[in-house]
Length: 502
Ligand SMILES: NC(=O)C1=CN([C@@H]2O[C@H](COP(=O)(O)OP(=O)(O)OC[C@H]3O[C@@H](n4cnc5c(N)ncnc54)[C@H](OP(=O)(O)O)[C@@H]3O)[C@@H](O)[C@H]2O)[C@@H](O)CC1
Ligand SMILES: [K+]
Image (tube, rainbow, N blue to C red; front, top):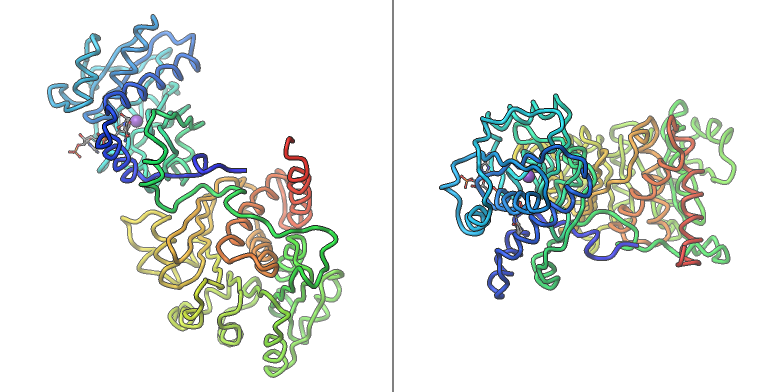
């Protein structure tokens, strides 16, 4: 289970506001810096008790200020410590100037440092205030530290990493450990940032939690506790656990719909039916047992079937084929709970507004779209092409425009709702990027939607469960392994819920 502070992500801008609000409420801002720097020194001593020398690299702002505090604490603890600064210390202001004043160690320029084996780097060059690509001097040092594979303890963020977007500004340290303050930041969770941080330690420097909560936006790391799975009590009747309909494509492409359907069933949908044209039925019938098949001979049969209110959710896209048929089906589904994936998304590339208008009346979103990067760019070319925007901003803008939940897939999938809520998912193992994996994800989300979960929660839970199933299935998994692995994950979660002490 997740408590509010372990899932909360504050953007650098929100963190700055927390800092200002803390100062306005009378909290000594230098005290915050002192605790931040002390925490960094404590982590460095704990992680590298045998270090020959700590080299503290200090920048021109408050991240550098944390560095001066840490350097003083390391030296006081008896560790050999040297400081190299990016800019002249005469330019330091406010708390950073105070931290430097209290630190008696000499400060050499960054350009004078030649990284040597045995050095442990304390990276306090840039944190939340990184505003552009790192200067060439620092880029050189980053390269040399990387070449020598020196351990790096990053203060707040590895310098060069954009805390908002997770992107690298020119060059960035590859940290072995990161110490950040109060909450994690989006850049710690998004890629490539996540891979640059090492384990992230979140240290409470004493900003009152009510202040942190007052500046917090709607961004979280995706975790159970942010959503609740439907009650999968074995005694609940299958008709009460909803009925998911998955649409299949042509006879040579039924595998994708089968994967979605099996996953939907494993996710707890009471009934799952694959709707297919007569040509595709034999191929489906040869493989499906627990999943039912509905032959859709002509458009009237389709319309009658879809109109049945007992069908509580739909999946359209996996292996479906692109074109008018997909658009016609979605038109009939307007407003109903739908997971639109793959070909279903691509079918609207020439007229995305046609799709969006079909779902504009819903007061709460009922459409979930699950695009990977290429599909996202087909529906939202202007948003995808905005070089300034990060993945979270892109997903949020797309969700608002489409009035749909957007699952912007990748190793750092972002789930965004039209109301501005957004979760970053971080539990997907690399093996999950395998053929058919997306079909399974669409089916899991469909299965949760069918049970009445709201679209955003169903999407977030589906993405997390998909990641856990991938971990459970292990290395060299295939998509066929995932529904079974999901079954184990859900069973384990149910056991934990029954025995909270586990
Ligand atoms: N929030 C809190 O509660 C607390 C925050 N704390 C700490 O404060 C940190 C944030 O401090 P910060 O805002 O001073 O930003 P920071 O990262 O030091 O950089 C700004 C400086 O860098 C400069 N600069 C930027 N990019 C550059 C580039 N590419 N190349 C060259 N220069 C560049 C920029 O110059 P400018 O853009 O103004 O020209 C400015 O001088 C935060 O990460 C945490 O460690 C803790 O003390 C505890 C309390
Ligand atoms: K840093």
